[in-house]
Image (cartoon, rainbow, N blue to C red; front, side, top):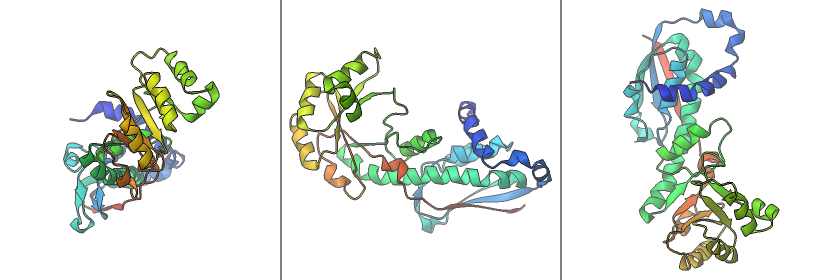
Length: 283
């Protein structure tokens, strides 16, 4: 069964994506494209976690195809090796395959790159009981796709938007005059169910946050040694999130008992690209 809610949710995005190709300027070209059926082969050419197939399928369906996502769904979120030479086969009219190919592949590649990178972090942190979070450092226009890919890679979403959680950052503290003043500003927003998280830069600020009854604390640019000190005074019911330049090469030193989560912006902005291709031939 086609998920019409998903289709409607990304229809505006799809219209924007296709407007970049400027196809509306050349009606002669569009009308001349043959609609003969072609056999399409989506080829996995890298070690990767495949993610984004709903977007891939919906790209062609936006143009008028009738691909059934159920035929693709078993491969979503699965990990493949380059040596597998894995191929997903399906049929399309030539005009739709040619017109949608680049956008479909761009979305699938971007999503799979992030899911593949996210899984590397998740595989290290999950056995330690620590969750890896993404951030709002996403590509403008692609936040939904990129945060979807994060979850496919076994990580977690931090915030979809600014008002999901009131985040007290260093600039808030500087502008309002301190931790208490910044926290008071957000508490005066009267968001009954909106939690507050405070970005902490040293142990003195940590104690201020405890005194204010803050339950969610981001230990920003803390060293592993500083995190261990913070864990020693962690009250019950409080969550600690580490953040600040933590990389795949350094994350193991931050997998410290008592830490609840680590947020890593590079999951979305720094994921190495993976290789996929779409080939087709006349049926």
